[in-house]
Amino acid sequence: MTKDIYVTQPYLPELKDFIPYLEQIWDNKVLTNGGPFHQQLEEKLCEYLGVKHISLFCNGTLALVTALQSLRITGEVITTPYSFVATAHSLLWNGIKPVFVDIDPYTMNIDPTKIEAAITPSTTAILAVHCYGHPCDVDAIQKIADTYNLRVIYDAAHAFAVENEQGSILNYGDLSVLSFHATKVFNTFEGGAIVCHDAKTKKRIDQLKNFGFVDEVTVVAPGINGKMSEINAAFGVLQLEHMDKVLDRRKAIDVFYREQLQDVQGIHFITHTNETKSNFSYFPITVEPDYPIGRDELYANLRDEQIFARRYFYPLISQFPMYRGLPSANRDNLPNADKVASKIICLPIYPDLEISDCQRVIQIIKAGAHRNEMV
Image 1 (cartoon, rainbow, N blue to C red):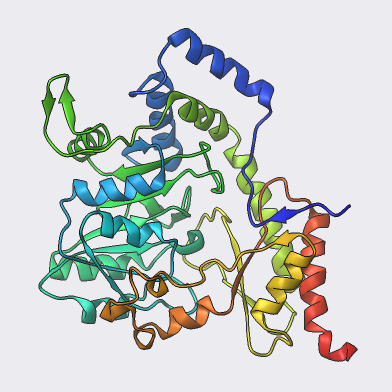
Image 2 (cartoon, rainbow, N blue to C red; image 1 turned 60 degrees about the vertical axis):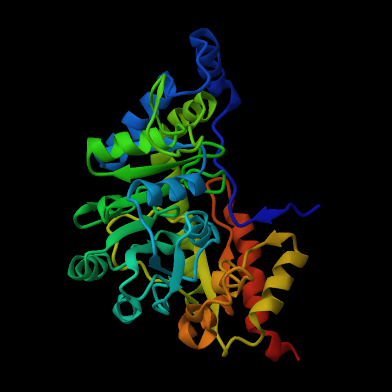
């Protein structure tokens, strides 16, 4: 029987290795509210990622919502339509109007050359995404932000451990937001975090994720319950011990795909260019017009063989009902994003994926490339 293969699956250490952590939580009798494992994970992540301050959350979406609140963002925020819906949803939850601008067709990140024209007197921030873990043009974005006095928040859900020549990509902008969902390179089952530059900002974020409490009798802001539990934090501490091995394995799969697919006509993939350390979080390909079958047919062929590749991101955020009425959501305003969404497929990549399973994926792609020869 052929086994199912998904785009990504969580790396899970041996269960026996997690038992001592559970026993320690039981002995500590602290399940949440910034317990010992919560504090330990924040410290270890700062060290591993090369960042100054990090605040853990129960998921990345609440981290995005809180990041916007912590900087008191209002009005309009310029963002990308090519992302997971949580990016734009976090704006709506804060009563902020998303303004979509197009992406670069090669990096699939927000195109800085399109940002300036979208700025209005109501614009207060830029919310950019390091798509698939490939860094945005952070210097160009920061230059625009400085010129117009805008805040910059990075949705870095895909960018755990990614670095450029200056160090961690998470150190750019005012804040970076991580996701530790089970599908991510580093996961805590469910979880997320905000990376910031100073202790004062971290203190405000920590208050906001705990209902706005300062002490037992003082509430200073309409915060939310975004705290990470001790079980999630403990799993993160354990998971972090294996991260170098996880990243090495992902790199090996990435290299194998590139070697096997580089000569397949009509199949393109992103070239690693502006990062010195990648996390190989996804392996997106685009199905171009010179490939004999369409993207959706290839997608169906893969699924027929229990290979659950994903058209990620399709459709665009801007095409969902709550956004498509916005002037900036017009497809004529987003030609590159619209085109990429119509031809994208993310192939399976995760540490426990066997090379034999990668070969199954490649075989189906190559079969599609030779379909005309078999007619």
